[in-house]
Length: 153
Image (cartoon, rainbow, N blue to C red):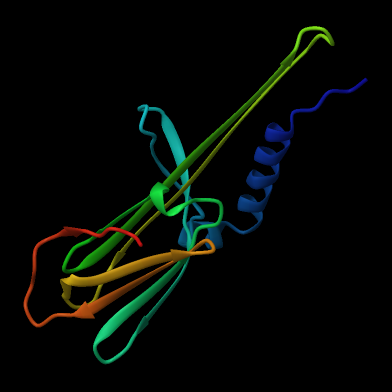
């Protein structure tokens, strides 16, 4: 019977893809290294992001499936927006009569920092999260303002 490690196979597959398309991976990293809350190394995925500009505001939509609004940390300054989300999951099963023990862990993280071309009105910034999509609406400002932590509805 041949045993295989699915994570090792996935790592090898990722290396082969990176070798086949080196320029693409250099310009658009999907995984961003970072630190977890426990101090260990974590990897964050870059959420798919749309940013559009109207005459008076910027509207940003980020896809972050599998997280809840409580998992998201959103910070907006007059010239940038930073979004970070982390979710951990652990499942344990044990049945001593049948002689098995099962444990699975999963980590999911998103991170994105995007500079904004002009200042925004921090007190008029609004965010809502629905069905895995975070929408942030930022009003354009005339003057530069200080940083603000935005609560998500």
